[in-house]
Length: 215
Image (cartoon, rainbow, N blue to C red; front, top):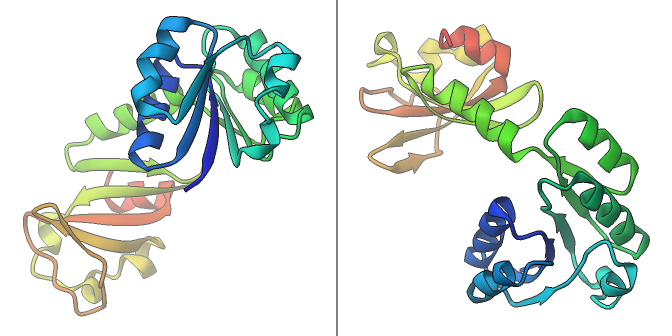
């Protein structure tokens, strides 16, 4: 369990708060709009109405007591930037800030953010990849180069073993697990037989995986 300071309760912040609650983390939620704070009360440990660009208000929260500070402010980059800088100056241990564009990410990182997330960009990339390939079921980007894909077993692989197809040697990609009927098998070895109606969780460089599965 971690203690999280969540600043900004718009659509993105709301979903972050609900997921943190599901994961049983302690969450202090902040927003300057009363209705947003009230809506989130069932999902957070505590919440306050306040302006995150006010240093005195932020100082009263005991910033350095939280394991993570998430700046989820949208549609007001100036406030996001000021808040990021202030929480870092007040001793925040780990600051994660929301950005919409690369230029925003650069400013946030220069002004105290330890990491930056792009909700719209990341979902857009996932949507483009997921729905333009018939055999892709999920996609998780690990970095600019590496990703995990959930793909259906190609027909020509059915009845063959992992060792026989040997995509590690041919494409430098690794099969992490096999999924069937909602169940995941991570005990993969060279003699594991591939069957129809299965999907593979494959990790590797995106370019290699795309070549392997003709994405």
